[in-house]
Image (cartoon, rainbow, N blue to C red; front, side, top):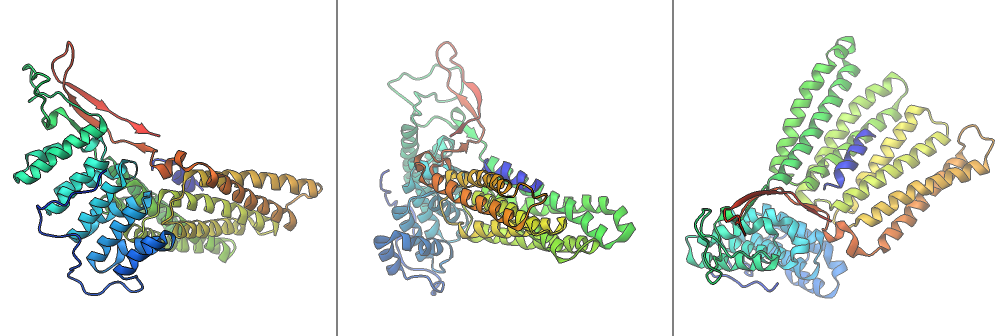
Length: 503
């Protein structure tokens, strides 16, 4: 349960039309590709277009699968564009950012950048670091489209990187980024009357503003803060796994000698687990939601294995089984989490729904087990196994859904309230009962289920424009160091440090 509490604390920390630029050699609207076969069971390009025009609800799933898994690059690019024009959502922004970051084909990366630019600052703004990183792309098509997307949707953290490319060796690219920097500052209200360098020389008159001030006059955001948080969270989880599983296994199988050396084994496995998972976080799961996907599904797997071990036997034999199965469950769960990261990363709402469902189902399972007179260790096993399986299944089933904070919070609060009401009703019906009976157990579980359903419906009906998960309004901006032009009686440049967030 301590792990579930830790997961809950981290969970919350989680335009105009583009102009085709003739500076590259790849036409993103071309249907040519180096591969000749598409993934099985995916609609053709013509069918994708027709589905998107006729029935978005039916087309959403095939479009998202095609954007991630189609073998033909042109199909992936088409799916990304159709998502941008027909399904503007947090999930679409996440899919486009992933394609821009990971797809090997230039056509798809350019389409992904265009997708983010079309989605606008509300949905694509959180993916500014991905767009900034793509300004180093080897393809001029991807580079210029990423600049266009930043001009339309990027936040203030992008201004330095966009301005720097106004001095690109290719004059066509330099002119484009000159205009992108100006458009970005206009959109954000960042206007500078300019200084050529950070010196004490008099600044130019207002009649001759510097359109692109040098980078030092702008800002330098710590864009790696998200990667660092993801790496640290996965590293901490790996260390916790080593510290738990090492002593458990040695104590279960090593006898007295194993028990004596269990602490040393825990330290060694903690270092190994931290190194392995932090490396994966740094290289692949490089955002906090992606890292938490591995942590959450891995934790569900470990708890499910421990619960199954408690149900398999009594006494010491149950402890041995739990040590073995919890390790197996953790390995399987981490593998499933990594598969989610690589193929269909769950939304933040899906992760929250998985945690809430796991907690509620686990409590319901333990209540029923106790009412049927199960021993304590088996009641614990029922709680861990049922809650973990339900949580993992919910996370998988809702992975591609845009689940808001209000429905999840409503269901969790309703479940707690309903369980309390059910307990009061059961005590009123059976006032003389010393222990829970089967009937009282079902009354409490019914209250849990009814409360969760009612709370979820109420949260679902709440206005979505106020939901921080759906509107991407809950954000912690990276720390920024800036050197700003002086004003008034202080003509020299002033260094500042800014930390901000939005809700």
